[in-house]
Image (cartoon, rainbow, N blue to C red; front, side, top):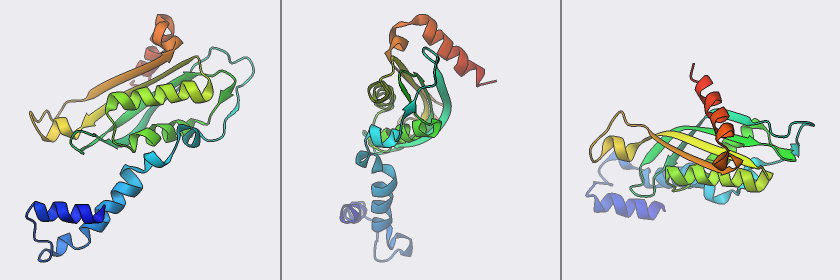
Amino acid sequence: MATAIQDFLRAAGLPLKNDPNLAGTPERVAQAWAEEFLDGYGRTPEEALGETFPAPPHSSGEMVVVTDLRFQSMCPHHLLPFEGRAHVAYVPAKRVVGFGRLGALVDCFAHRLILQEDLAREVASSLARVLGSSATACIIEAEQACLRIRGDRQRDARTHAEAYEGRLRKDGALRRELWARLGATKR
């Protein structure tokens, strides 16, 4: 990867040998991409969620919601960053996970080249599959560098993507309850 970055910088006409600021840049860029931006490819949702625990007795049908999980990712179209907040919800079946593990699940997919819409879908579907939840959701608000610094340069634009699985896909009352909780966090 460092060799490819070096070739890219040369192709851009940059004076690699004469600019001390570019010394070591290919190696630093390669390390950042491998260890921070693309490390999600090396993790599965099961690994990200980690240990599961028995659901509390008599908790059937009660929703777990964790909001404002900060993340960063890279758009596959221009290799530019986007960052934002994910709001994740699920109705426990037999197993639950620690709240922090939901952020790890978001990062498992965010640290890949992925569209915002696909990020939401992967999180929601992985929760449904791994935990056996009958209702999951992932709602993402983000700021896309693609939209802010190139093209029309919409500096104030925020993008939103939603994904629902199971009962949250179909059940209007349950989805309204989720959105009421999300609205309550903005106060």
